Length: 223
Picture 1 (cartoon, rainbow, N blue to C red):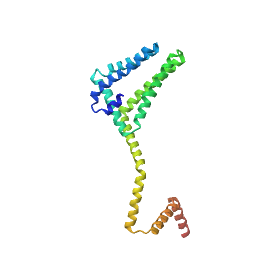
Picture 2 (picture 1 turned 90 degrees about the horizontal axis):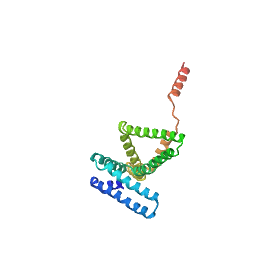
Picture 3 (picture 1 turned 120 degrees about the horizontal axis):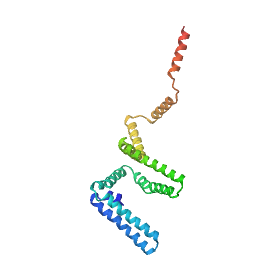
């Protein structure tokens, strides 16, 4: 919701507090339903949802330099989406599926209270932390951002070329027909020319070594 609002509204800095307030408002429905249900687990989940949004506002909104993080992220996501339509599915899969499942799997390893699983969870946490730091280093220090944008541009060019390829072929064929008509080349001569070109392509090429061997044989015969 936050990202979509940034992409649609022209004044994203003015939209930020409204969007954060709307996120708080969405928790009220779940909170009221949990109070009526009489279930402790339902109330616990609703309160987690509420305080999660509140803590997000406390972290990202009060300090001006912290507000730039979600704003710049939304702007960058909008620019990348404009370059390639594959960005939204990748963003949704990574943020809403891959990361939560990874965190859930790590928490399950530590909750089993077994030494082997605890050691495995610790090693996985180390590898995940190393992967994040390595990605940040590649993104900022090894021109990862420029390479990613170049990949998006190449992918967009390939997609546009595939879409316009049939029309381009028809256009080129029409131009070739116009050129043949303008030069006055008869159709039978065109067919003969195509046969000559095909024969030249099928004719085996003589390599330099074979030419040198033939020349040596002729020299020996002359002697």
